[in-house]
Length: 237
Length: 343
Image (cartoon, rainbow over all chains, first blue to last red):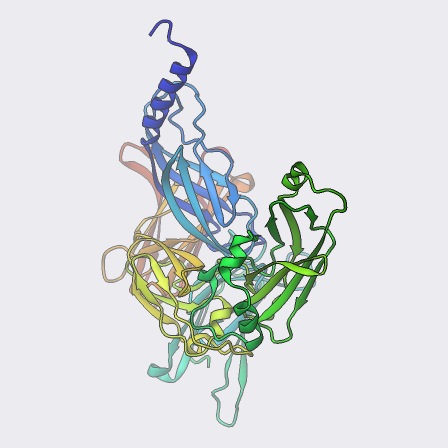
């Protein structure tokens, strides 16, 4: 090896780096929040393990994620680092670049290797209405010291459920579920469960079912400040 | 890319004006003259740039751009102008002018529909370049609505809505799943105002394998992406520090879906029927503890266990257990749940 030219060293090190690259394992990638909007700061938490040689640390280390068209690319930081301690599972959280409305691919690359790929959907900013079955739900909450109620942001979890948040998209405050119980008792069933002691009012608009009434009807569910209160309404609409 | 044929919906009935305009421009002719659009399949939000390539001539293409959206909503025209430089056209000058980029700007479209624009380069009173580009009325790929929104391989997954342009196509059939591709058929005519997609009834995609899916139109253009995860019974929160598990009433563990690092939910029988939601907040700066909030949407019995993995010594870990009894809908707020570690 003595007298080996610099370019040969570079090639040898490159080959070692390439072989080490295959030893990165990504078990999962989680986004926070999992269902973000374009107004949210989004992070990705990567769980996995690195089993690298002396060229790199055993920690999972990544360059800052970057947006390339509709792909968020996360690239392993392959720069040489301290000698490797015993390898093991690792968790790294990375802030993602600002994302506009739309669907994105997310890739994790180690050199030329695609280690992991997945998808992320980013909704439009600030929806405050959740559409559930044939009903729509809107929630206002009362900030401490403020006389004016504020609209909570809604995140839809599917046709049947949604949650609302007040100040942080990662901090779920109220969850609402609507089941179609018409086959059982002729009504939609509404379940409201609270993770807060703040005052809130949930308003649900649905089809009017009382005799002589046509069009829409409104149901309200209000929780007082200082109380953690749920609502179950099996005769809602 | 000139006349990107793949972006032309095969079943799309074009307006007579657009059809006539496009028919007048043989794609091979346009490609020969090297008009290239960036991005190749833009949305109405994109600034479109066209690259012109010419050989042996000394034309400059900086005399202005005129965008004319059509009143029929499906087509428009763009004209960019240039002129031939006076004096001798040397080989060096012609080479320097061989490739030029012209900013066309944003190309407006009507609501919901994808519009075709005929793009012409006019110099010295004659049309030198002619090409075409389709502009989507939304940024693609867009967001598709799923039930459940974060499906796993044990869920029957429903496609609730897709980008509006397709919701406005008549007689769209059910999507076809093949591998990790979901193809959405289209009808023949755009409709305005837009009717609810499939009458508002979500399409049943069935139970999907784990992986990353692409929703595409019949031409293969991406409409959106979504993931289907393997089912999980342990919810990891706060970068894995806490593990949460729920024993459901019929025995066994409930399935769980993470909503981020602080919260997640559990379901018992149906992935679309959320039963319990948990969030754990780091309030150590307030009272030295993490705070656990459990919200129940059920009156069925359950046992929820939170394990602090950072506290484990051998097989022993600090845990908190919250039990819901049958017939009672009850939440839990525990502001003295776990401590330890730097806030």
